[in-house]
Image 1 (cartoon, one colour):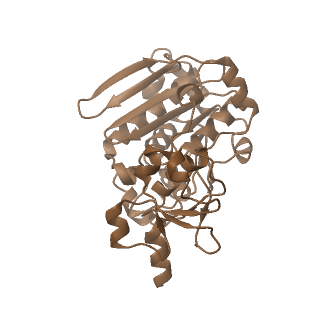
Image 2: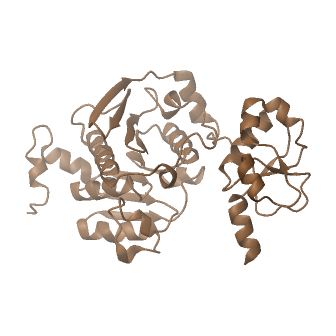
Length: 345
């Protein structure tokens, strides 16, 4: 008889029944990065029978500082393939299915078929709304967390109680929430939160303890404190999420060239514009658009292409101008940096 799980089977209230529940469980994990790494490693080690891992990214050297499921020889490989190889070394009895793609709707309905729990370790708003919509349709719980610098948030959502949209009813504007590449991240922070996500998943499957449903846990790593905020669900919102297409974050279409546009609008600040700008560009700083979108829109014709340094400010400006009535705006993908690099190649 295997001794692999004996230590957790000794726990009061867990026992052999809890281990059997894990063995029969199917958990879908979105993201094989910072949060997904400890989630996958601990769920596999605990004896979850089936894991579906979904991610469309490849392993980069900058990932290795925190995404501990990957190693030096994984650089350049798909994250899902690298994760599967690591899981096989942790627990060869765990069945792993990998999907090398972004978690999307309606494809996600097929990927989550017969899932017991969805764990959302994604790093973008659009995916989080897709996860919530699919979890609501399937009426299965989903574990969610997000990292921002030294802090993190964690919760468990379930249709009919509290869902993601009860906390985040509207998507943020582009630029409101910086990514890890912009804000930075410490490896142990994602390790702590990812481990907590794995724990919540095990609680949901085995029935031990009280899952974090109806609460938002906020973690501050610098003083190592947890704050728990009560949440309230809106049943009418739940029905809406379960029956309508998933929401997407505010944004405008991207283009990779500037041909055939009504006008080229540079939304960077004055110093950036003076230092270098694309020929024929009109300067309308983001600050002036944020101050008075209606006034700024008077200088921007329908069908314009907006650009900034990397494409984030132009997306933000495009949303504000669209709300002010300008139509068919587009954003230069990657901003002036990517455009000038491609022109010089």
